Image (cartoon, rainbow, N blue to C red; front, side, top):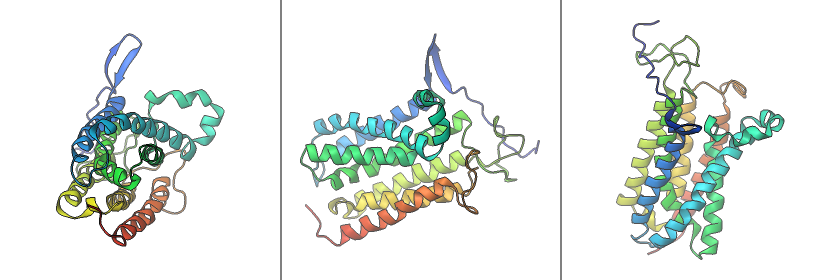
Length: 268
């Protein structure tokens, strides 16, 4: 082994187990993202422009959780392994084995946001802006869970911080999960908070959604340059991966939302 390779810190994906009941880091990552995001949104919703009461945000938590989980799982099934799950439909229920799509969860939350906003007679763009601020938190924890699971590793490399992943073969690879945790999580969250605090973005419905969409699209495409494509998909065309392909529409939608927000007068 290259002496410069950093040993992969093998962490048991199961935090604690009680008989057949196992508490996995993967599940805790989703719970942490939802709970921390929920608490932040409860505080932000009391600032102008007021969207919903904290009590209504509490009600929306279940909607958001269902959107993330159902959308994320169905997105993975449809986008990444449709043939496998068509032949093994019961495997769709094995969430503890991993297999979630951000783009699917993203669509699930959009649907939940629109329906909940219509039921509560509020602007879905303003609620979406609040969710856009905290979404990077879930992405951060999700990427850390990928790293702990030793999955979605990077491409082979000779950089000094390369790692040999247990299921990734003998060659050193980029710890791309950590790259994505930083860019999709920490960096994007910082951008969203700065937009909320230092600009009039909160008063332009849809602007923060647009910044998040475009920002995630860029971060994901850059991350895909270091990440090994899924083995059953490989490269779609030349250097293009499925993650890149699914992220391109986000760039256009983000640009449209930003343009739309600035074309309208701000709200108070």
